[in-house]
Structure formats: C-alpha cells, structure tokens
Amino acid sequence: MENNKQYMIQLSEMPLGKTELRFHIDDDFFANKEYSEIKKGTAELKLTIDKQCELFTMLFEIQGQVEVACCRCNAMYMQPVEKTFKMFVKIGSENKEESDDVIVITKEMSEINIEDWIYEYIILSLPIRCVHDNIEDCDQEVIKYLEQDNEKSEQDNDEVDPRWEKLKELK
Ligand SMILES: [Zn+2]
View (cartoon, rainbow, N blue to C red):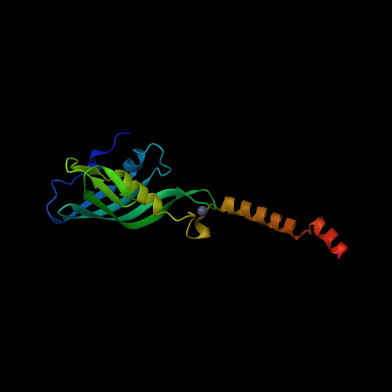
C-alpha cells in the first residue's frame, strides 16, 4: 500500500531548533494499513522536532483510543492509548537503521515518512492483555457462560487423580 503523503516530513526544510507539528489520526489511518488488526481509532499526535546541525531529535507524543477485542468477552471496545517515544535521525554516508530508535539518512534524502512509526508505537502502547476496565462492561452473556465453564473445571480439579492414589498406597 502506498504511504500517505500526509506523514512525510521534509527534514531539509526544517529550521534549526525546535519545530512542533500536530497530526490527527482517525479510522482512515488504520484503513490504509492492509494487515492492521486495528480498524478504528482516533488519536492526537504532537511531534516536536529538534534540529541540531546533522541530528534531528523527534519526540512523539500520542494520545487517543483504538478499538480492540476484549480478551475476556471478545466484544470490541475502545482502549485508551498513550505513548511518548523518541527517534533520532542522523545525517550520514548511507541510509540505514542503526538501532530501534536511530535512523541514518544521507544528505540527499531530505524527507522521512513517520506513518509506520506511529502505527508501530500505537500497537506497542496497547496492554499485553486488552480487557474492559470493569467486568460489568463485558458482554454479560459471554461472562455467564465462562463462569459456568469455570465452575465445571474447578469441580474436575477437585477429583483426585487416580495415579496419586496409587502412589500413596506404595508408601
Ligand atoms: Zn470484555
């Protein structure tokens, strides 16, 4: 899929010192990502670029909410996301990724696309286990079903494994 021009930053045109840019992210941002698990969301991004000679320090501050499936009841809900991260772009002799947060570009490459970074960091800001804040917000039909299932498996656990009984007899 073609990258969105909207997220192209013209680094060569930046003045020295700090420049603040703002981006509004909505459903279209995720729709543009073919394999995205997230289909809906809104977020505000404040990007502060500090240009110093041959180094750009880019501070991303993302705040918003994206739609994910609850791990407990499987219903979709809006998960708040908040993430601050820094990327460093250095001018060097070749284009390469020096590390997770350091990119080297040549003088000739004057622009950089931040779309994939934004996406990646939104994903990283999601909790490991996405669930409704309160169990009351969960799909109650599903919860009821799960509770019944739990009770059943607890009962199963109460039954003593016959192999253990055999071992005891051997003592
Ligand atoms: Zn839920």
